[in-house]
Length: 469
Ligand SMILES: *Cc1c(COP(=O)(O)O)cnc(C)c1O
Image (cartoon, rainbow, N blue to C red):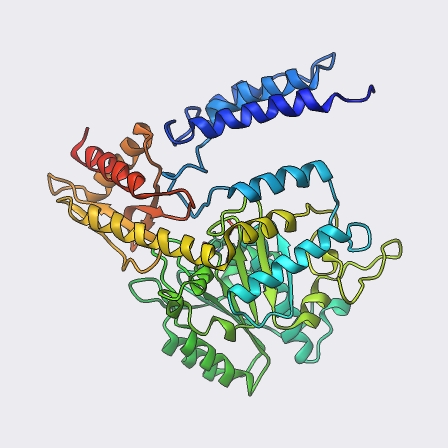
């Protein structure tokens, strides 16, 4: 291979990136291509002969463009998704160029140090007493790692060496979850050998909050090793499980048997940076492990999840990846592979560090407060449209909306039709859901660039779709 000519390639790539950003505010938010169209665009054999890198990039953009969703747009409200903050996007570019395999601290000291520092800063911002933490792909793997540490810890305390003897023959572990836990909790538990039929499911209230009285009764009924999964931020309405009462119940149980409290706060934990909203996530610090995301409300580019625990020993025991050819973890800068499921891994710490640095404390709080205020404004605007019902208590950045059929017959059908018209219109992108057994549209306001103008345009688009236009 010849020495590559980086400059023309990266300059052309930069031009194409800028075109994407320039069109972002006006282009349709939903992709033009359905998955099958995108498949057709990319299909084809490996070419016999290779191509110039620049031609490859142009061909890639041409094929990808119609199948791209404007997820970084200020009017993308689907799932819970942030846009990339400028400093974090740029840091992520450099991460690719630097190409560090951030498994070991010895091999990639800057990447490991940036990750360690960034995770510690997140722990400080969220006021959590974490003694270990690591970056993973997202909330799914953050839940997995937190629950792996939990499993190891409660079995260890029950006198069982999980790492040595495995799960077969181990004392049973009771897993307690709320009825509206996120689906990634179930998958994480399944990967850990805990099947869904064995879960103890605690009922929730109208907002999806775990009933702490029922949890306390369940915990008091049997003294067995127990893991409780609580949630900060319901993925539909944004509600928080009542941590003060949940932590009290777990503390009482811990006096009689091993117990661990895991908190899934993929986006909700970030309420703790806002003086106006931190009470929603009160007592989150009493958990044993926390799962959260940077690629949601903190607006780092994909992907970046964060898991933290207050029991570094259990975390490390569950994830330790020591092998003869790998250097030992240094105490001061531990190797990420000893705390993460992966060995080879992307250096996500650079982009996370850059995001924190761009925003500062006041900027993170400002981002959270601004998006929550805009969610309130959007909720008020929607509630003012006849036939539109905001279903949840809007205390955070999430709203769930249902549309009454003007004919009074089929509210679910009308809601689904409104959703289809909104997505086809392309000026905003909420995501359809089912909540409290009915069809609904959910809006998550988590993007740093969303402003009042976006809310106005969204209200216009939703009004049109509801009226059938
Ligand atoms: C989004 C979310 C997850 C999953 O996070 P990913 O980053 O998508 O893996 C887990 N729990 C809650 C409450 C979430 O909102």
